[in-house]
Length: 182
Image (cartoon, rainbow, N blue to C red):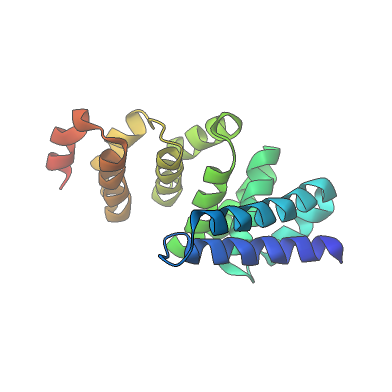
């Protein structure tokens, strides 16, 4: 029961954080307190181990992007391919759900998630590549050739994410590719 509470609170607090992070009436201190509460619930799920994962996995299809965030943190921190696959299957259903996974990848320190992000950038799925690009940008890391490839993708959403990434990362070396990709 306690582990279920950690899972539901982590999902709720992430959704709350997602909605207030850009709000004018929320101070940085308030967001930091929210982050501390969220991290405490994630710690509870980490300590629970496999049972924590099972609860998060069960909530994936019910609780939206907050549940994807919580499950994504556990899955990508664990490095377990079956957990990662379960999260990706849900996160790729819609951009809203993908947002939860991108945030999870941004929550985890880059050194810990670097290889997983690079794997996402090499996948065939345009949606998964888009998640990988966004995660790279959150960490302010160069996604390498995946960025240039995405600029010329026939998938409009991937191409748009790549163009945005060029601006966010200040990649002036890719301006010609960006102009050609528009």
